[in-house]
Length: 172
Image 1 (cartoon, rainbow, N blue to C red):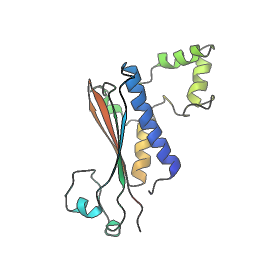
Image 2: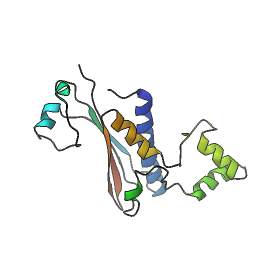
Image 3: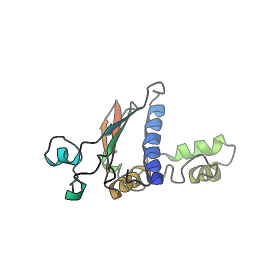
Image 4: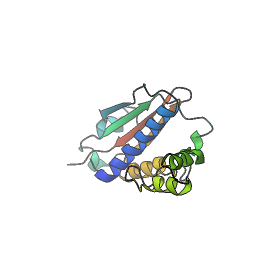
């Protein structure tokens, strides 16, 4: 894979966090989150239109490269609201409410604001430094695209969401 392991870990962690949060908040904790990993088609199949996939062009020197993979993360967390869909790729857009932050702070016995800031900034070592700030999806997609892949979201409101992460293989 051409992805730097840290960036790949970041992307997958963000996608899984979103799926876990949606599933828990929708009250469907017992529903599994499915992760499917499938080999991407060879470049020759994509060039001939043999498969329907991401809209990526293949350079001639990539034709003999190993195929990449597509990772699908599927949750039954109720889907993304149609009003929210246009904003999911915007930096700083978040569905993480102020009440969620305040709840985290009060659970640790502090005044709310300081403890919530520590929680978001990862002071406890158990969360991402960008958690709840609206950088997960757009930054994950930017990383994937930088390395020639992509992220695609398909949501069925009232049911759940499928997120596809496409990663290119490493050439010969």
